[in-house]
Length: 136
Image (cartoon, rainbow, N blue to C red; front, side, top):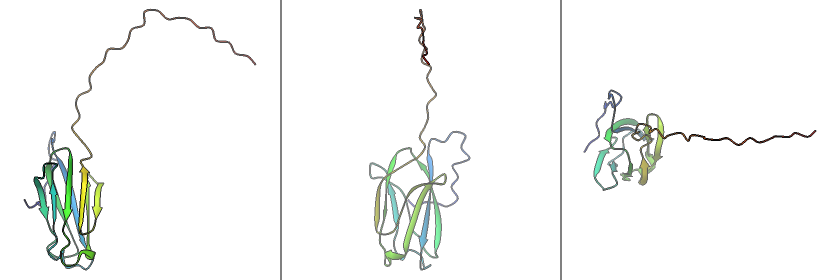
């Protein structure tokens, strides 16, 4: 699966999934030189994959992720010292690193929330009185 740019999860009335932004950087400015990233879920299923084909930076939007934790593997390519990346969710940093790298436990920040449940308040049938004394 290749992650696609321009994905927008903010248009959902009630999203049941998460969007991550993968910012890719190359210090020399010639792309990742055959390096790539793969994001897999806890079952090892590939959720997204990508590379920086050319230039010094690029962004992928990875949408449709279920709430949970993922692993991101970045291969080294020809010049791993040039590679940098960050994964964010709504601007909050999930992980960052270089190459080669394997980041386990990259978890979504927000999960589905359920409606609050009402718990009955205890009723007080009798209240003991206490005398409070202050001494100076």
